[in-house]
Image 1 (spheres, rainbow, N blue to C red):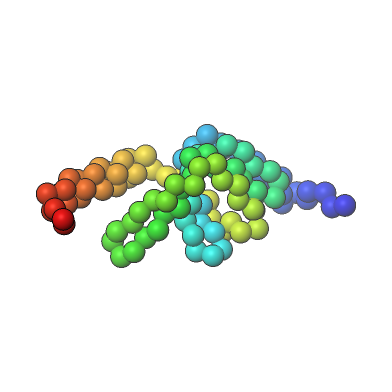
Image 2 (cartoon, rainbow, N blue to C red; image 1 turned 90 degrees about the vertical axis):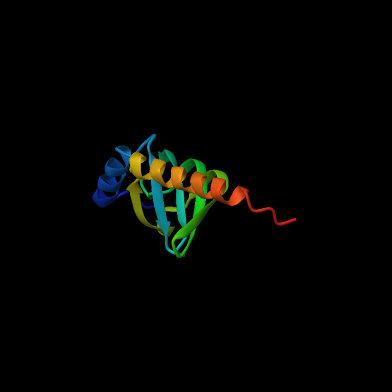
Length: 107
């Protein structure tokens, strides 16, 4: 049985400041997940609430809803807090693009 070492304690205390905040999590396979950090442990296993996978192609992106999502810590490359202002501007832009495209009737 192995116990958490001192480096694990530093990791868990640094993640504590992100609790209940919207985060971007980059995984080893290149996926980008967004969600609210609800829980974590000493191995950086994390639980995201309201998670979605962001798929980016060129200048465009879409979010695929995932719901409650558990991430294994060894797959995490990067965790960062999302700036609310930037996220709001991106969603506003997406809304205006949708409005601009509604006039096109493909039927």
